[in-house]
Image 1: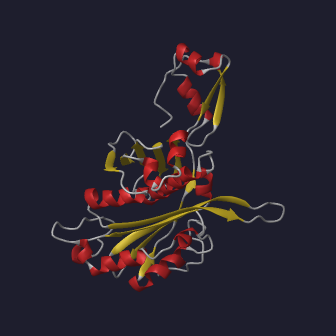
Image 2: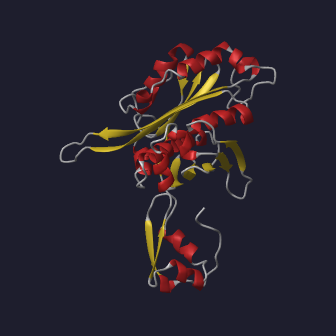
Image 3: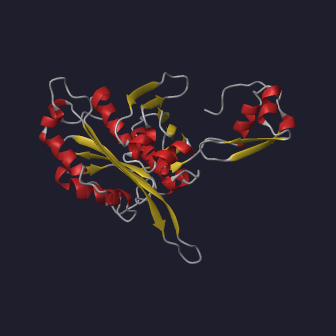
Length: 336
């Protein structure tokens, strides 16, 4: 395994919190990513007063978006989104390279309360619908989108289905989300917050069944990935990871990967930082308001003021209704 796994990386990433750690298993020809979210999970999940089942779902979505978005090789955006007929009718997480995350959900309180005590309530949280994963390169370039039906109790179940059917890349994903008590120090009291973590491994095939550069190659049509002993061994090892190991801030990612995969000659690459960052601003909201008609402004205001709340970070922006609409070129939509 490369390097001293107790040290901070050259990029300044603290090993206990908020990073994505890529790795490769030399013996079995697999690659993967380990995600750790400490303050990022806390920042995103506590922006809204969501019930705990909704927070757990959003935490899973944020972790999955970080895991998949980290594969981007360019400056762009990865968007994970669900639409369904369940109590959580809409969920979206944006990953903007190199590692900025934000997300929110829309849910029905009455429907959520109705299913809370029912068996299998986790499956009913989303109901029937789809999971969409969009890669947006920006700069007027064409988007790529993959869509799969929501299946199972976890979003990772649908992600497994997508990789199996659409990408034909054998994949195993495990995600854990939980409340975490952070002890205080000095006059600063302790507090409850959130942590999340995830592990993904993928079988990569090229010449001789080994990874070929950075390219992800699907198996050939006559190749059954489950017949590959190395892949079966990799999946079995990955499946032994426990939730507390993914969440433990005292267990570095390198130590965890060595614990899981030392027999596979695990090679760990530099970690990349993740942060919670919303792209909203007062200037962007003001620009948006300048595009509405006088009638629209009247409907949006209370007669004197207009308050706009960012869905992602729950920040309120207040404006004098009499100042709008303004005569200016609408220009591009700056809220994207």
